[in-house]
Image (cartoon, rainbow over all chains, first blue to last red; front, side):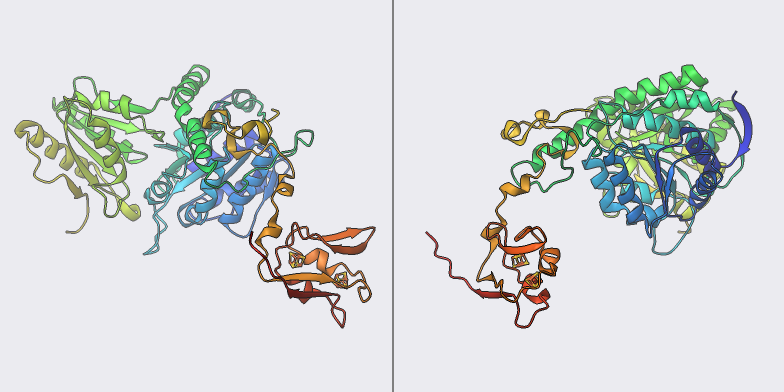
Length: 393
Length: 108
Ligand code: SF4
Ligand code: SF4
């Protein structure tokens, strides 16, 4: 039976891992993801799950163990954050290149320097071209739901690509929330059995994985790799719908909040959506035509779908919780603006960076953005397309 | 579990025809890669009279160039010996039972 419980984001992920009982969990604890790994280690020690738990000497090794175990044919998971994800860097690309359906919970945290343990998206945004599917979660419920779906997406025969499920450090990882945990058996049934395509342990069909590949094959292998993530949208959609049918919470690429007849909107990801929704409600009560789009899947980027929704607006503000130094705006903005390029009717679009290193974002900041959008919508003019929220300037 | 195509079958394969995940279906295909062609300047000579068959050379050789049968070193397989000289350094006998000597290569 499903039950209503009070959990934080990390405990919700640990619960999902307990229910899924993967073959191997290899992880090195790092704030704010530590309690996921700690709890899973406890579950293994208590005999609640029979996963092989490996605690190597670094995150680089943790991802290496995941790769080895996944290549052997196992269902594999890990969790990390920030510097830990950064230390996994070269192995992330290898996991994707080898088409290993590893699932990782990433608790979003700022990257050094300066050292900071709080939530922003610099870590996963840095990994956006590593070949992993990226799913962002607003709260603990979504983190749990996304994590369960991630196995189905990653392991789908047409996809076979690793997935990272992310949620904001401390705000979600450590805040208690009332949420629904589904029935153990129902989750196991939803995730299903995993059958690897070319497991190294299939000794009747010996293979080599990850061999050297020069000018003759590298290019073909790389394009072959892309096919997995290009096949992902269909699967993400199907799995999100099936999850909805089974558990009552349906998922797509993004959530549209009060977007009917909206003239201006904010586009963002993760926990800030909660505060933004509050603000939208306040403004709607005043009769203002404002809305919110919360993006869930950043990779593969749902460019066409998003652009279709945005193209009917007058003005859009894209809010990024990361920067892209030297680029023409922060990552979500750059992708979104590029997605709109082919649409003859497109909104004015601006970019704000917010919340770096866990800096708070409150309804007042969202009011500020919506005021700006209304001004742009009425004048048709953008005086400054890039700025910061809640920064001492 | 799938049976992958052999390397021979994949020789001119397009990206669509390749097995996913860089899988190389040919086990032990490095046998076809003669690393001995990398040797430049020196090659090891095995001297069976002083050899105590400790197999240090076999353990340390980074390729598969030390020929061993029934626990005894028989010689060097020059098809795979890249001439690194590690075997000579590791050989514990005095005088050494493997000695690196000058090798002239005539390019044709
Ligand atoms: S020279 Fe190097 S490659 Fe050749 S036999 Fe000795 S150790 Fe092996
Ligand atoms: S290291 Fe020297 S003594 Fe030992 S087996 Fe090799 S050649 Fe013989």
